[in-house]
Length: 500
Picture 1 (cartoon, rainbow, N blue to C red):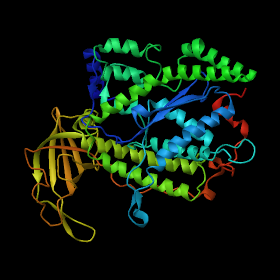
Picture 2: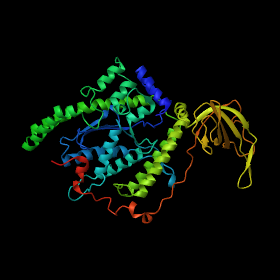
Picture 3: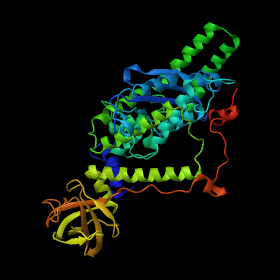
Picture 4: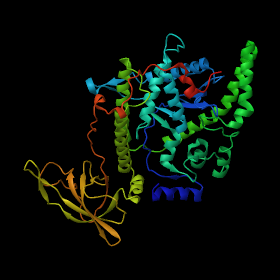
């Protein structure tokens, strides 16, 4: 946590009001997102109990697993949820533009869950569904493995910084607002919203007290409150099991209706809070570079859609060593680009990075606008030197490539020297791009004495690292050649708990 971030949290605590951390919203927010609020029994790792799903606040569909330990009911639930999600995804596979490799869908789906634990719940569900067979023993409906593969694709995209296909609402809120509570407490959606937008007529303290009371604001999922499980849910499930064992249709219908009513009371408050948070996030203007990142989401959505249309195989259970290295490289590059985009677009984020020494701003004190250099092709090009005096802490070394949000588009520079100047620092940079194609820089493309400028590191283009081929990988980093599609039936116990 940087100095400014810590200060914002302290200020929020003192004022008992959330403090904005950014000027913009740096995540794309779809005009028609699909909200999923998953629910699982406390203490039953990954056992689905229910989900509420829908693309509008007033048309949510509640799906319930009356007996979460029953395999058939679990996969009937997965089929129902999968059909809703796949219909939503398919609605974005209509409008496609461009030719050849540039052809892509113009929009992409967006799934929102209350918190990061909701993302984990979908990851568990995707892993269990994508390997299931649709024929033979223990067959499941055709939509189940398709749903599992798409969920896994969305989970993998969610790991990459700056993407918007699958998002946690609490993470979107905490990117923009700082509260006076801990990071762990910020994962409680009701508690977080109590800081940002308490209900009318209630103070933040009163709203937080309600948010922390599971009888007033049930947990935002995916786990239910243990008190609710012991007091209400477990007896209701036992009555359902008894009615099913006796074969009494009236008692069974009554038990199912009781379960749905109990679970609706637990899940609907979170459903309403999610849509309240979405409305709040829409009031924050979207950052300029967010649209470009969403184009990348549309490109990857199109690519995976084409892969599925060609009957591509499910994702591997585990990455190989080479696959893991490639994934890590991709995630690191995406994180660097996302952090740079945020700082470039948002002066609040830039100030945060300046306080950590990862960027700087100051006044130009010296320039050499006529300086030139000779390229490898024996061509003389302008390479002006600019010296900036800053009072920011600077932890950037010579040869660091820079971009500037305060200069025209395309402006780039490189640090030549960093020297102390009393309580300040003098940083000399060489401008090497964004000056036009002539031998003399265009007016306004080189900072002038007295001008205030800001610089931050340029993530730039980096070549994809070269890794050895699979057959050249040392045996210590090789995986046995096992099928991606064969999973023992008892693997359900790994995620769903033991069978009855």
